[in-house]
Length: 351
Image (cartoon, rainbow, N blue to C red):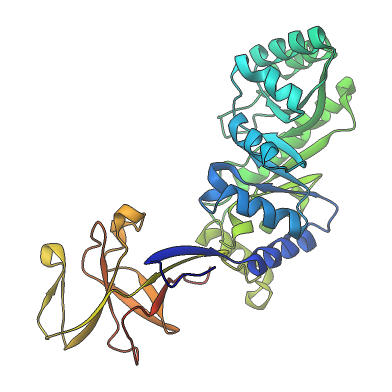
C-alpha cells in the first residue's frame, strides 16, 4: 500500500495472522474446528480483510454477533459456516434459516418461530443450544433444560447441531476455580442433551483464554477472538500460562494491526517548558519534541496522555502532554536523526 500521501493509517500483517492461527491449530491438536470470531468489525481490524486472512490461514468457520454481520460475509463471497451468537429478531429468523447460518438458541420464542418457519417451508434450521453455566447472559438454565429439550424434540425442522457455553471468569484472574465449575456444569448439561437423543453434537466452550489455558476445553471447536489478532486476553492469562508452562514456552503472539503516522513537526523545547493543554507535562531538560497528526478524534485514547510510548526509528518514544483532538506530542530527544514525516508506529508491551 502506498502511504506517502497519508498522515495516519493502519496496516494488517498477513504473516502475523497466519503465525497466530498456526499456533492455535497446533495447540488444539487440529482436531477442533477453528472458528474465527469476526464480530464488531473483527475487533476493529476490518471484517472483510480479516476474513480473507482467516480463510488463507486455514480457519474453518466464522462467529459473528448479528445477522447483519453474517449476511455481509455471505455477500462478500465467504461460503464458510457462520455461527450467529447474538439474538436474531423473530421477524428475521426466516432470512437466517434460508441463508443456512448456524443460530444460537436459548429461548422458547425463537424455538417456536423456527419451528413454524421450517414446517411451513419444509426447511431445516441449524441451531447451537447455549447452556447457562454461570455467566448469566444468554443461555438455557439447568433447571429448564428438560422442558426445553422436550419442546425442541417436537420441532423436527429445528436440527440441534451443537451445544456451547461461555466462561465468565477465565481472563480476569489466575485462580480458575469458577471456570472449572462452569466446565463441569457444561459437561453435565451436555450429557443430558445427548442422552435426550441429540447425539452426536458439536460441543464448544473455548474462547481465546480457555484455548490457551485449558486443553480440555478444546472439544469440537475453539472460538478464537482477541488472540487471533495477536493479543493476550489479559495480563492474568499471560501470567497463568507462564506459571503453568514456564517462560520459555510462552508463545509469541504477533499483533496483526499496526497504527502508523508521519511526524508533522519537529521542535526543540527549553528545559522547564510545559507541553500541551493543561500544562500536564513539564520538561526537565532541553527536549526534542515531535508532533503527530493523531488525536482522540482518531481513537487514540486520551487516558494515554503522558502514559504511552510509540516507536520511532525502532526506538521507544514517550507521549508527552495531553492527547489533543487531532494532535499528540512525543519526546524524541533520545532517538537519533528524527526528521519531518518520519514514520511512527504504535507500541505494545509484551504480554
